[in-house]
Length: 125
Image (cartoon, rainbow, N blue to C red; front, top):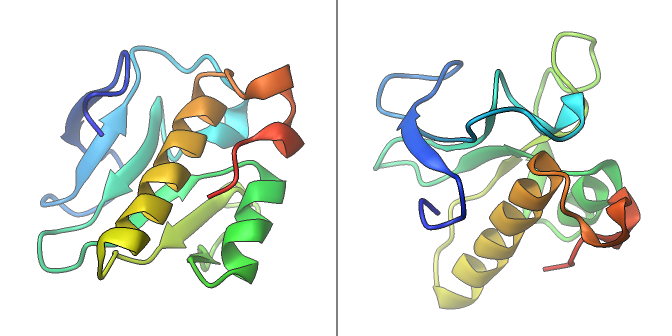
């Protein structure tokens, strides 16, 4: 994940100390593309493997419908953007590919580089 262009890893600005976050130098995408600041995703501690990340609404719905994610409990309450989901930790190579695709979609959303610039055109895992 740290190999994505411009991404820096570090502590999360919103989660526990053992959480590793993905940060961009600046927030260039839509406001709902970030957890906090320019942090668009974070991986929970070594024993967990789940992630919180942002996805365009259509992609978040797709991930939830397919059982790859669930809405953040506070999503849509006005406290955090409705675009934040919790993605389950992968159990095998196939699930790892799905998670990687979701991270790439989150990155594209945060960097405003989704194909055609629309939420609906994000790559599907």
